Image (cartoon, rainbow, N blue to C red; front, side, top):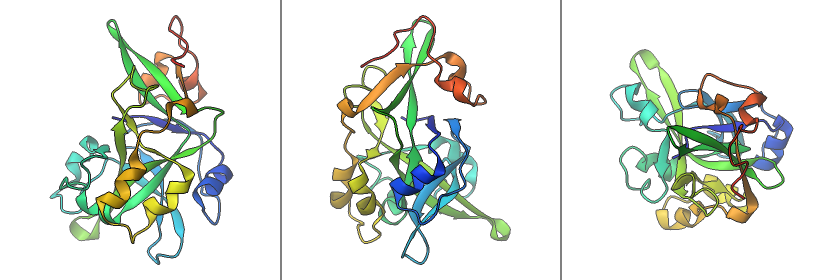
Amino acid sequence: MCGRFLLTTPASGVADLLGLDEAPALSPRYNIAPGQPVAVVRIAGDGDRRECVSLRWGLVPSWAPDPGGAARLINARAETAAHKPSFRAPFRRRRCLVPADGFYEWKPAGRRKQPFAFRLRGGGPFALAGLWDRWLGPGGTVLETAALLTTAANDLVRPVHDRMPVLLRPEAHAAWLDPGRQHAEELLPLLAPFPAELMTAAAVGAWVSDARHEGPRCLEPSDGAEPSLL
């Protein structure tokens, strides 16, 4: 699964990567957690441009009787999302890009868990494959939420966790957002594990394990832990 990620790249860099007409209003975030707002890029209602909007992380299906179960739907397995009731409609019609420049996973280490930060080799932002949905409540309440797609871990992530978020290559962004592509056989090839040799992993301190913590301290090296996996 993917339960935390970060986005510290300046907004202009996000706009360049994701093909936005203007830089979105973004602040550096080092510990984005479920239930919090996340920036997503999707095709606007007019179908002619991309827009960056803030949605809550934890997908509420449009047909849900209430939004109470959203915290459990933070991830969707790429292999089955096209057929699962909660994700089937978003997979066909409501796909998005979630900008990030790193994500965290935790490795059991005795009686504790050691967090690792995974990033691109050389740094820089990337897009995670996401799904979004719109829930309409009583009195016209509108709630828009999102989930991240996950896939099998690559060789770098596997020693820590058997799943990883789907990092989309830039050349796949347009295809993932394309509303004309609605069939799994067209989309599943985009959702393969990202090449391990293009990523790095580093052990970070336990500070990041508390979702209430923010700031650069989340990336400080861990004391007494193996500094990296690769």
